[in-house]
Image (cartoon, rainbow, N blue to C red; front, side, top):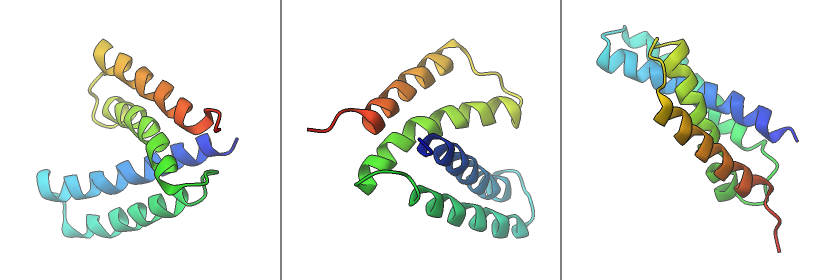
Length: 107
């Protein structure tokens, strides 16, 4: 049951890493922002290898739902843009899909 915790940590690492590139390219932040960004993206990739899954593709697919919700949390907490009802609805649908992929019975 540690997979959800790993997914949340991976999402934070991925979003932070991508935001470092966004900051450099779109917000005019200094180039040194790329170093922590790349380290964060490496941590993200490593964390996904720790997920309890027999197949990488299944781990990545179920991670997608967590990433989407984490992105909406980032939108609100870091960028100060409150998600609207469609963002929240879409995030819930994605979490349901991620749960089905991660914990669905395998035949």
